[in-house]
Image (cartoon, rainbow, N blue to C red):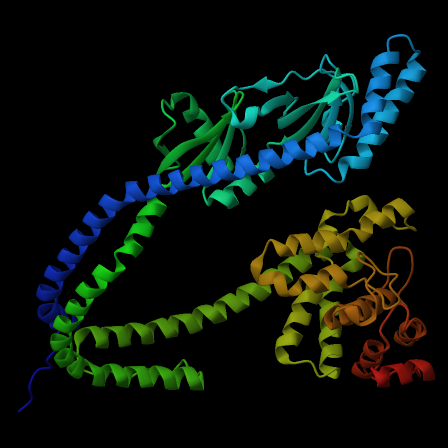
Length: 564
């Protein structure tokens, strides 16, 4: 008696029926517990981090401000510097412009002597009217002589620091008076720190938060992305308190004003979403206990279903492993008959592998055809170079076989040779097809085809292996090639091969301004230039790869080829 074919039961039905009811209830409990814990801890964690950052900031800023003021005081006590400033103050009004320039130069020289010992972007001396007399340090150029820079001071700022705005640059300034022996002030000494991204990054590393420096409503420095900084800048006028929350780039952030100096405020920001992830990590111990219960509950149900499923899955896995090991992807996997899903998966996999094999063959054919089409399109621009790329490709492969290159390397050489002159697409016709000798300028234009060709190929991922051939096939062993002047073995072997094949084909085929040369003449030229323009081992491989030749290589070249 023949029974009708019975379709195996569905794998999803077997697994879900046993495990879903118990697992769903437990997962719901886990989800509720996590959400409650996270929602409760997120805001507190973010605010606590910012409060800690503010305390850290206050301590750091106080220490740095004291250090800067101590440095400024030490510099201001320099007798020679005070003498130079005092002399300028006494004589500048009655002296000539030349003498004034000499006095200012003396101040600048004294300032330069101490600049290396001061941790500031600029150290500046100003007169009583706050006109710059001299400046030194990495950003001294921002303080032009004679320029008046009013300081913006906030009595509530840390140790009465000041802010100076010079063009597009904002400085935080520590100022101390320059006192002469009679107790009179002849000017002031500024230690200025640029409020730029580097400054913000240093503060951010201390506080472990994002930093934004805002002056007159504009973000002048931050550790945020440019988009985030612009969005925060729009939000600053709406901030009504020193701390709170705001939305930036689709994420909720907590912010806190750390301190202010003059018209400049320093903000710390932290992502509440990041804080939420931190809170989730804090609840890991609770989730672990719940997970243990879930595992114990699911284990009982899983043992039975695993026993029923392990045998067919193992059989399928072994078949896949044998296929991967043998790389015989055309073989079909047998059906297990244990479940509908496994059999469907097996059938789909068999169909997929057949499609992949067909698609791979079609892709390879299309790949080669596209490259040949590019080479043909290039050769078509000049009737005298028609077929040049194809011939160079054939010669290059013949040389590669003589040098015992692998099939994979030969394929790279073959296609790279087809494309070696693709950069000439960008060379004007009046230069490329010129029947006579090229001018130096025209020759420089022609030489750009290697770089242009490499740039074209880099935009096509599957042609990346051929870039070296296109870019370096005019390099020479003596370093006089182009575009990079590589020397000897620094030139890839594939590029060396195409260089020789290209030169041989160019000599043996006619051009508008000359006839083609016999093969033995071309080989003689190649041998004579081996070691300087061409690699001897490649020239020797070409000589062996060609049909019967009548040229005998020079002894030196033969010896060099044998050594190579």
